[in-house]
Every structure is written in structure tokens, then in C-alpha cells.
Image (cartoon, rainbow, N blue to C red):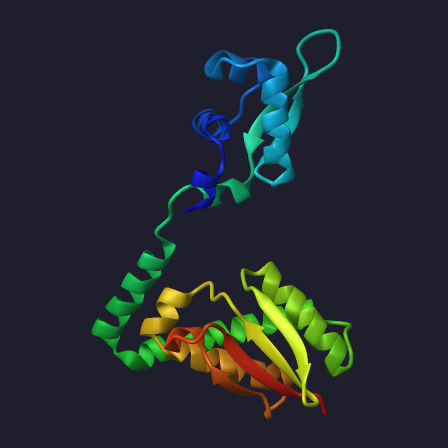
Length: 210
């Protein structure tokens, strides 16, 4: 079940109306969905708390300004997308026309870009404990679901969700480049036991504390 299906029918209707109209007032929404202004406000507040809806003031003559409600960028997650299919199709085309070597180069470029971005996010942190805590937060902010634990003196970093799973299943170089990135970021002794792309429940990285 996707996020859109999890919302009740009135909120789904509000999301659709805001999508179609690029923003509406409470009065406009009341006319469309036939419920009271108080009811509309309650639904908008719930969607605002989820980060799906925002608003801007709209002054109408003398008196208190009204508000125009609109969807945030996060609301795009409520609508179907084909980004993975697009990326997979492009990678398959590149492999067919330019060979696997070109695909490998693309993923190496991606590793270099992600390494630079991650280092910038961890700037100012020192010591493996602080760095790994920052890495955990950074990964979760970028679509991963992460556990970080100490086991027998080492750290176990478990990634339970892979944002590019469908790509990494077909193009194993994605996983190889991720391991390289962690080695460059955290030290050459970082190892990986298994990956989601191989059917494991998580990608498990073992990071020596010393």
C-alpha cells in the first residue's frame, strides 16, 4: 500500500484538488468537498504535520489575511513515479551500446560524488564514534533505514532499506562502489557480510573501532 492509499478519502481528495489547482483556500476546498471549514482545517493540519501541505497568506482587502494551501515537494511521494524504471532503462541502453565498462565508470563517478557529499555532511566531526553517528543520521536523511550497534568491539552498520534496490539487483557494481566509498570514508578495514541485492534482509557493514 502506498502513502496515498493510507490517507482517508477526504484527505486524498484534498491532495488531488491541491495538485490540480496549485493551491486553494479553505473556502474553495469547502465548496469542492462539501464539508465545514472546521473539518477542512483539521484535515489540512494533519497533512501539514506530515509535511505534505504548506500555506501562504493571501490578503483580501481590509481585515485578516486568508491563506492559500498548497502541496510541498514531499507530496510528490503520494503520486506514482517511474524513476527506477527510467534509470534501469538508461543503464541497460548504456551497457548495450557502450559496454559494461561505461556503466562501471558511471557508478565510479557516483561514488566520488556521494563521497564528497558525505564528507561535507560529516565535516567537523572527529573520532569514529562521532563520525558513525553522523553517518547514521546522514543515511537516514537520504532514504536509508539504519541500525548502528557495537558487537565484539566493532561497529555493525545495518542498512535495512536500499533506495536503489531494483538497480543494485541487476547492476552489482552499485554495491561494489558503495563498499569502496565506505572504505575511503572510514578506513580500508571496513568489510561487508551481505547485501539486500543478494536477498539478505539488510546490507551489513563491519567497521573496526580502532
